[in-house]
Amino acid sequence: MSIIHYPTLHETSGLPSLAFTSSPRTRESWYEIDLGAIRHNYRQLRAHLPDTVKIFACLKRNGYGCGAGPVAHALAAEGADGFAVASLPDAIAIRETGVDHPILLYPGPLPASAQAVESLELTVTVSSLDELEHWRAALSTTRIFVKVDLGFFRAGATPQEIGRILSAAYAYNDVELQGLYAHLSELPTSSSSAAEEQFARMQRVLAQAESAGTRPPLVMMSSTEGVLRYPLMDLDAVDPGALFIGLPETDHPARPIALRPALKAISTPLVAVKRIDASLGPIPDIPAFRPGMTIGILGMGWGDGLPRKVSSQAAGLVRGQRARLLPPAHLEHLRIDLTDVPDARFGDQVLLLGQQGNEIITLEEVAAQWSTDVVGLYAQLRDHIPRVYS
Ligand SMILES: *Cc1c(COP(=O)(O)O)cnc(C)c1O
Image 1 (cartoon, rainbow, N blue to C red):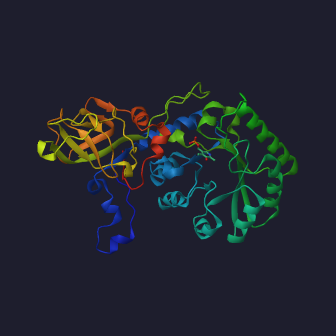
Image 2 (image 1 turned 45 degrees about the horizontal axis):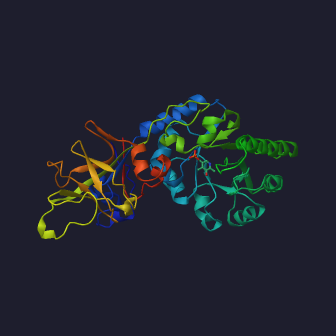
Image 3 (image 1 turned 180 degrees about the vertical axis):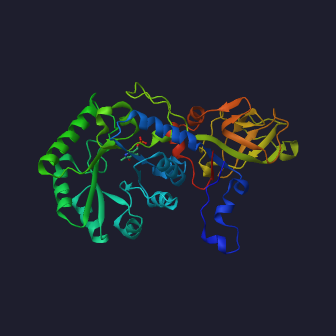
């Protein structure tokens, strides 16, 4: 295991540095991320794609909680062609690892951040002529991907508007038009062929651009769902994200890719252990509380990404045994029932996810307890909890 360490301002001040105080040994709780699994998932995807199709790895939300920098570094070593994020801090984290690949910014950063966009050589998304003019006014060279909305009703120009934006972009000497992209809609619709209709819209946009001589060099529209289900939509590049952290089986994928989960463990220590006695007064009126029980206090709470309402079915692993979590959760702490784990001691590490001895708590189990799905669980990982990489 290694801890990715970047120098901080504090390191020269004589005070403990931020990097030090957030390392697993001092911060006590951590996420264990399996970079080998992320590499494996990349290689699986690469093997299923035609050689000509580029891979832009989407690492938004700090690489789905796994650390945009270390994940980008690992994927760059595997041969990824570029990256896509929705925030500047994620782009900065990638550049700090020395990765100099193209980075596309999805809609999010504004021209007020032009200095950072320029110095980090980032590519911005443009969905309208107005956006194009704002970015041009702020940058000396404006690198863009134009975004088209194929029926998601989110960012992106309508198919009807696209031609005008592409022509304008090509007409400017200070604009480098690198690509055109879309994101398939996941909105509910009465149409059973929604994906095909969106692809047909993209094909019409491309046919028009070709006849106008304004087809950008890189066209992409497939994220995880698209790349697994619709090989026809590969086009010049794909930009999946969730795929790299590993997902449970998709229904009838056209590409049966065996993925491995990136998150191996959520570990937090027992910061206190005690037997309840009568001097505490009446037992709280909460299911599972009873006289004489032993409770442990975990060093993680809902301020650390755990759900505000912990399920009474949820468990942690202590000394290789399953022990029930005791709702309610608090901002920084959560109780666990240690009555049946008499060996448990102050400082023991408790797994809220992962394997200890023969006991295992899976991602799917945790996601269900947190009332979310696996991607939602990754999105709940907090940036102040350090990650260790195995
Ligand atoms: C989030 C996102 C992706 C990646 O989606 P996944 O489902 O995680 O693969 C790709 N493109 C855009 C524009 C996105 O917003």
